[in-house]
Image (cartoon, rainbow, N blue to C red):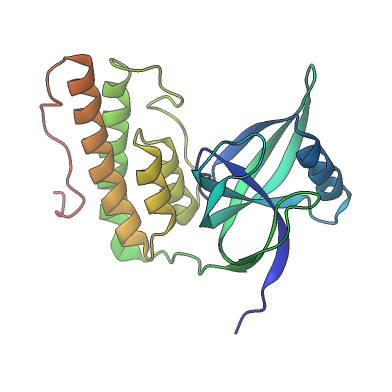
Length: 222
């Protein structure tokens, strides 16, 4: 059985997926202390978990217990804060929370990596087409964080996570994807949740529904 290890934790109001970047502004004293310790370690990494209830600032928040390892890749200068860029890596599950002194920490165990199989190629391609079409359409309703032509990693597992990360959807839906138990499940739900999100955006804006056709990854494309 895998031994639990202690890591620093940064609770946030967003979900970090493997293969995706996180851009953070650190200004609270406890997280500045955490960052100092992280940068002094052999591998500058910490865990990111989604806040279930409460706020990012001030403590007292309630946190979900599945998160992602973030490795610091760049530090940025800021006025009154330290900016950093980190890269999402392995997923983990919290065994137990330690005292938030001087900053949040937890004992965690890594979750299994998702496995790529060649039979998933058509499913992947179908999901990618669906996500990119939805991303292009979403720009009619919101200012998208990612463009529809965003490049993906060469590794198919990382690329699948990136599709889930760039697709427009509700935060709790993205957190649900973080808990995917198979690559097939991740791809299917990514396409479906993307489609549902564009329908919601269209309704909120008073526009028409999505219309047109999209590739259902549950079907085999020609």
